[in-house]
Image (cartoon, rainbow, N blue to C red; front, side, top):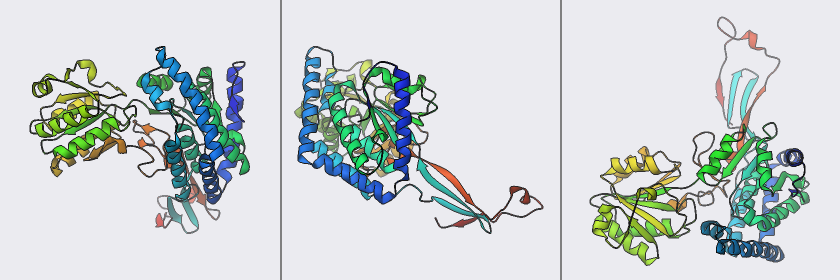
Length: 444
């Protein structure tokens, strides 16, 4: 199977792998929509096959055992260890997401726009794959088949570089996808796994081969990637998400949302790291504090918060804008909506922000004013996810503003071409005093 393993001739070897991936990607893009859907269903079925599952879970168990030893020695962040586990439920979720992707309408070759420029001169805007995508992602092995599935749907080849903690898991998952590719007449290199840290540097130098780099990780890592390449980078950095309790917040709803957003999966980038409350929301705050303490969350509060709940740990400036990735939550009093928005603007990561409010006008102001990829009203930030959005999966959550934003599904991996079909027309025949364009809209 196609994967990078050695150190010798690193740049040349990674270039060769990238070129092979790009060539196989052209085979993938040439498949019909139904053929790519069948390929996705094949991968989903393989993930559910008992012997394959046994092999995948055994590989993951080896990774987890090594990671636990590293964590015990203080060499691995506990949050990364938490993300590493792979179980039947996660495999079921990934397989279901791939099934969603297979069932979605075909994206490639389906004209988004058709316009008659003149009689017999018709222009179309048609989606097409980016080409070759390089993805560097954290120690979440279920990310590999999710990213791979989106690339299969969108006709893109991929170079995948997962965290070293998940090496065995990623290898097993990529080999599963490569076998499916070969069964459908596509080169296994369309999904290629890079395994060495040095491969990242070599990959970032391939600006003449790669079309996009997706960087998933901490803020500093994403910025490092962006500074280290001339390739376009889509960054999935940290998630510093807030939940704002408006004065009109209903206490039971606020508590339910806060518990889900913090405790559902504390290591996730869409978990909340801070709770904001304003005057009038004291009952909602109390309900949240009680519910969160009941789930074992360490709560850190500002002076105004501790005046009401003195049992809380005193928060410091370092707690605002900090991504804990654990059962820790900072709570701060704000002087109204404007102050809440200012706090989010200063400390948020442009990922996901939410408000709990019965006041519809206040909620709509919040939705309109917050500069983030996802902004929710009376809903948990944990909904910020490609699978939950109905995208089948996501390659990451883009906190930037160009090309794609929020959970990036298959459409975020597409660009488009302009196709013009004529009957021998020439541009010099058109213009002031010459033949006029019709510019008539046609149905796609």
